[in-house]
Amino acid sequence: MNDSPDFTEYVTFTMAGQIFGLPIERVQEVFRPARITRVPLAGAQIAGVLNLRGRIVTAIDMRSRLDLQARDEGQAPMAIGIELGTESFGLLVDALGEVLKLLDGEREPNPVNLDRKLARVSAGVYRLDGQLLVVLDVNRVLDLGLETAAAA
Image (cartoon, rainbow, N blue to C red; front, side):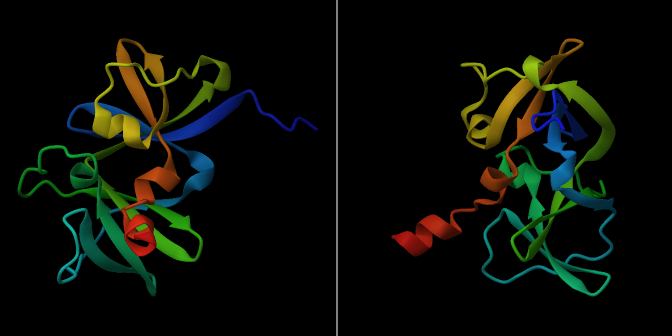
């Protein structure tokens, strides 16, 4: 039994020309959201809620979460379904990529010049054919300041 696998599989997606990865073991499913209902007084990062086979899922606008330019009107997002505790979330992204199996030893710490907003939610990077794949830390992505507001 090998307790520490030497590779991790990542579900990749792109937003604003940047490629991101989420560890596949954190991803429940990928889907195209049908109808998102806005939530009054919710922050800009919360796109709303949606019904996914009887479950209420909080839709998070990843462009807003990462302080990227808003998605073009008419460009339908894809969603990556993840869970944290008993809550279900759908991360709204521009386009899904492929599943990549990458060696853990090749993952690098965040470069010093990585955008501060990305570095906040990044668990490191991979250099792929001239592109930088930013690995997202799911727990940090889902930390929308709710815990810090409750603690204050």
